[in-house]
Length: 589
Image 1 (tube, rainbow, N blue to C red):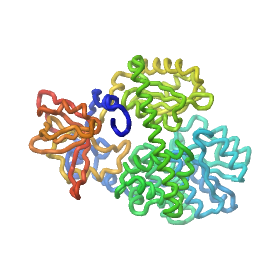
Image 2 (image 1 turned 120 degrees about the horizontal axis):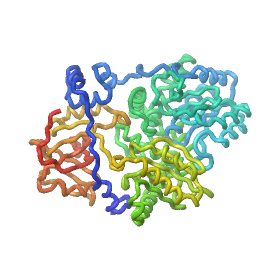
Image 3 (image 1 turned 45 degrees about the vertical axis):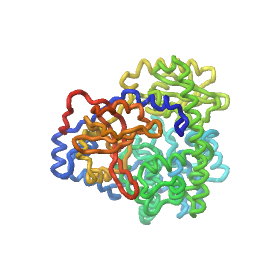
């Protein structure tokens, strides 16, 4: 049995499925022109062209981001209003409350803004809503807290753009709101003192894809300028901004790429004590990369809100000493252990439920429910189920007298529209293209399952029910060199719109040393035209039959570095394998 507890047959199902290989194309003339300017491997130029770099200057800005490339914060609509209202609060000694969401973006935004303001104004506190008692966004309970404690100005981060009625209510209590959000506004927006959100239709800010913490950072930069203090007072929080960018899955291009690049430098040279404590507990080896923020820091921060109280995450990030940071980091680490156990157990239960119902197996959607499942992990479980049964998925659990849950989509399918089409059977719902949340009466589970399946079946294409691997370029083993890899590394930080490059090599053969390791992983030693590489394919034991007996196969992979006994070697991180076609492939690029 694998360590995570899932039956091996389930773990292998997704890997046995045929996957679509989508090899990206690039304008050959643009590739040639860029290659003539950069004098690097044309494969790298092809990837750069695919990512919008067409000349030397664009490539230089990509490989060498500068803080001077950041946009003027005053270009954001309402920035002057926000800055003036905060400085007025400073002058009149008003009490300020920093309010934010319970996820990574929200807690890092609150921690950075709170810490920044606290250095210039004594009367500042923060508030994180309880995920289960108050739900997402600005809450009535939060407004009541502000009123009870005489906070006359609330700065809402990573939320608030949809809180029209609640901000109207706050106004009747004499509480002003400044909203720093990045979610798509509705037609009607709140009547706040200022709304900082680049996605507003009438906002001229050049970059639209900041996360909530990023919007808060721009406000801090504007405050620095207006207060005539160094921007270093804002740059101090770049590692928190980078953590938010990594966790919130926003595009890793433009301004986000600059912020993440310098945030990683800060995280490695002079990290926030909370990040340092989590990295220590997580056993991260320096230097920290964006993947460390995504897969080690972010889950522990999110676990606080999922399993208990997200205000612990803020206290971690505002800790004044290493001992205090470690105290809160250990609590988050424990929350994350509980989260992983719940996630593993519920996923196994859900897979068993599905496997026991043949009709569900044949459907084009998945809807599962158990009353005892932990509400904090149902979204994660929905994503896990898609790894096994590749279809739009809803995971429901009991929530008081109702049933609530989370939905996740497969790439390319608009989940929100599908949920919206089932609205007659729901009490509440919300979300976006790829993810959604919903609440319904217990007696409506079956009718919702039927309606959701009807909607999905009528609108999803067969192609979208097959996992897709996006491949950047074809490459030969002999082109995979240390210098090639070193340039790849300079393309970091990776993320949406700038993913780790994926390659395909054709007609490679096993050297006879490939084998299955730890029951369900595949370790290959493959050769192509005299060049040999070792690779690891996690949960790909079922692919072993494709490569044995020296039958040629095509391999999709990322290039990685392995360190053993002080020696570093390049290796392949395998994404998929298929038998080669009978005719030799054309390796020309």
